[in-house]
Image (cartoon, rainbow, N blue to C red; front, side, top):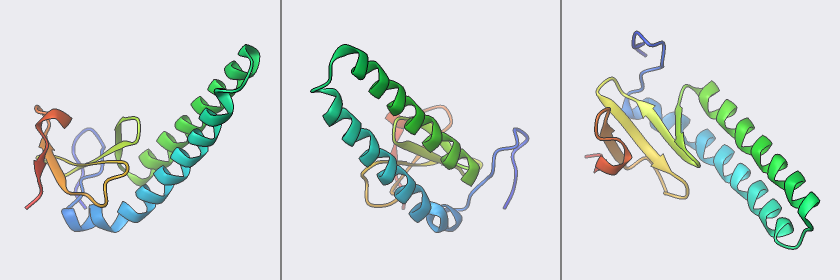
Length: 115
């Protein structure tokens, strides 16, 4: 495992795939928790909606902490990148696996299939 000067972990594709199940499971759990709140929020009065929004924010913040603790980068809601030294392997829930790569410059819009 190499390190970039920025201190971010550098992943080979195999290393990214090795931690992917944990990333997928943490994300699926957070999504499920947020969806449960969203359903409750649509029926709630305004004060309760604010409380539910704060709970959602806490769930998302905890998810971000858990994902970054693995060494990955969160690039959007339910979107995770693994720095590979030349760009990022990228995944967005609910994709089945890490199937895409993008350069540092192109970002998510420039995703290309991993070959």
